[in-house]
Length: 70
Image (cartoon, rainbow, N blue to C red):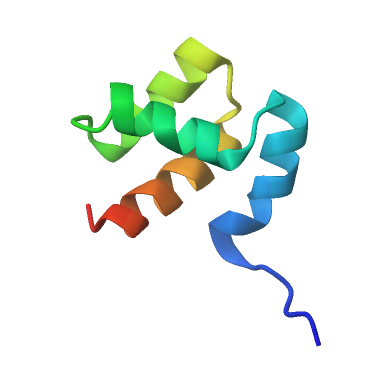
């Protein structure tokens, strides 16, 4: 039985569809260009540079930071 994805990762299919890139692409960009920033600064970076909506940016950053223990 498939478990329904919950939490921030539940946004990933719509992020990939709306912004035309796989999640790995955005994670790699955060690693390369925004790793040293704080959470909200990373969210704002995605919004300002890549035109993300707030919810999508926040979900992506939350998972990014959690997976890196930040």
